[in-house]
Length: 577
Ligand code: ATP
Ligand code: MG
Image (tube, rainbow, N blue to C red; front, side):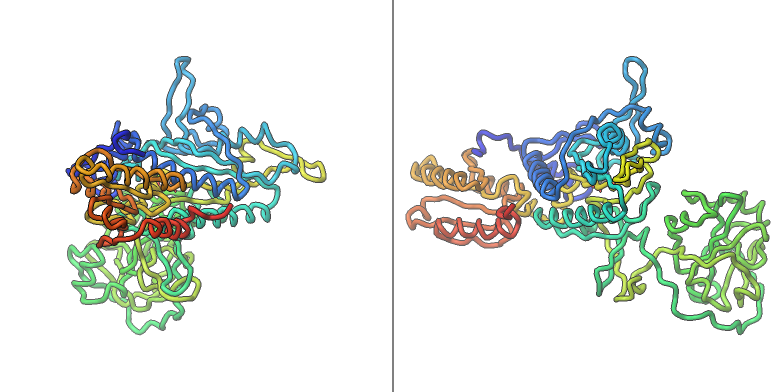
């Protein structure tokens, strides 16, 4: 590409509404422009990068045997009523009406559409297993769209849906997709980690998310410092302590704790470590209030708590007046000792091994010391209820857990037969019997990957694209071409030769000063820069600089080709099919 024929508009003035670096750099380079909250146009530069990601994803999906198709973005209400998600999906579902007052939604995902498609297309076991995928725009009315295309309302996703007649077959495709994702991230040049994930409302047994580690990430993940274990913090299991509960040594004693409501206030006031206190939360269960007890230094993991059969799938804390009515005291002074029998108590593993602990006395401005399970307080069950903390033992028994922030790039699920059953899909098996197929689904955020790559790789001067994602791999800059016509000729010839080798190259022929040219090529992150000037023409060499390097190198023309070949190999440009 000759830059004079392209549309490149850069600025170094950072827009005030961008808070993370990828959003800033995407605006400064004109990769994206905002149209409305969470809705962006992709400029020509951004689109080149988006296409790179899309192509790699498409190649790897095809290689795995998945079959590409394209489904509509506008989906009829009736389908969503069949699956039960017209209401359940919540406010993120953008509902629209056509001129005949028929209701539709803008697809946030396509389980319903693909299930409708297969119930018309699939009839025999001979057609299974099959994995359909598409790369299509999605819309989710995110409550807080932010960070540019990272959490947009309109975004580009690759979504795949596989259908099977046995769990074994579903597991095989799931594993294949797991490997496809790893391969995609390797080719893109991104450091990404597969983590065990919670299945949320969708259900099903297995689920993994793929995260790029970055401080700006909205997800928190836990991983072992010694093994491959990694999980979303929502999912990360806390091992039960391997100690047993000591025998009580203290009598139960009621203490005045005027105005001391939080665990910090109580532990400071009584000069007792937080880990020796029990924190009691009252929440709404399916039938009345339920108490959840945790060690004072631990926090509730709501995702885990929702898994208790006694609790609904969303945690609602009891209000002050609910608490007063049920216990006769205020929040802050509740505890498991003497709690009304109508409130079942569930205790986290770590709180269950405490003896002689501090807890609320169910009387205003009073706490107990020397409280003990069994003797003074009773519980229904011991459960894993807490968020893990750094330093916890890894659930696989190897190493300790560390905590990091991540950006979710993709999510793979084994859905089971939920959709196929609700939408009455059946296929004849080998015996001629009708069977409800099992389903897997595999999402990947194409537009989010572009932003995440920038989060992972940038410096003061701008973006540092991994080789495979760069809008062009090589930039050729000419110094004073007007004064030295040979320069244009040399640059043109190099440009032609690189292009003939299939190496995407941009020739900066805009006639700008060298400072501006260099700054632009650094800002837009071109991995390799070549400068053609009178000086190196005289010596028959090329001035070369890798975007990641601090210094220029004087090299021979042939060396440039070798170097590009080497770099490309690492990043999948030359991966054999
Ligand atoms: P998140 O927790 O970030 O909202 P999600 O769990 O809702 O993600 P999925 O429904 O699994 O996401 O969608 C598949 C992929 O689509 C995600 O892994 C992510 O890469 C991408 N994605 C989801 N929501 C957005 C969004 N608002 N903007 C950009 N990409 C998104
Ligand atoms: Mg979401």
